[in-house]
Length: 168
Image (spheres, rainbow, N blue to C red):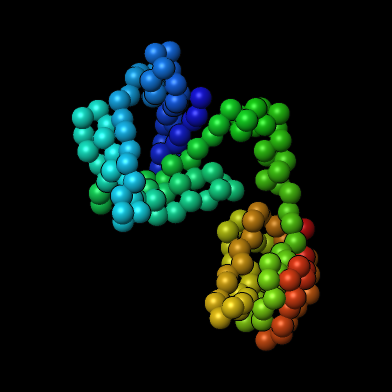
């Protein structure tokens, strides 16, 4: 059973193979099919209606997918049986509270440091801009934290794996 929450509203319980062997949504059978399109989207037939869906974003860590269907955009959060088990054991919350230092995933040059030691930051806040392979990469905080130490300076080269910012 998969729980799908669309745009933060009431979740849907999806069973890929219900009692009859057909997919079910909230205990009701759903007749649907999907075919990939050359454009990268999907043609979906569901309960006699046709839709074209495009995946515009996916976040594996957060288990969310952003879809565009027609002119509407939907953010779908997915939760499987293992996610519910871990949450019931309190493990998912513990993992979310764990704060990791920010390390360089590749060699590059620090263009801008956007935080200061002692500054409280929230999950998703930008903390540093690193130029690597002629692209600017904005590093964001993976969790709420406090900047303990900044180990780099602007306009300096860094190596892969080097700790850039220490968080607590």
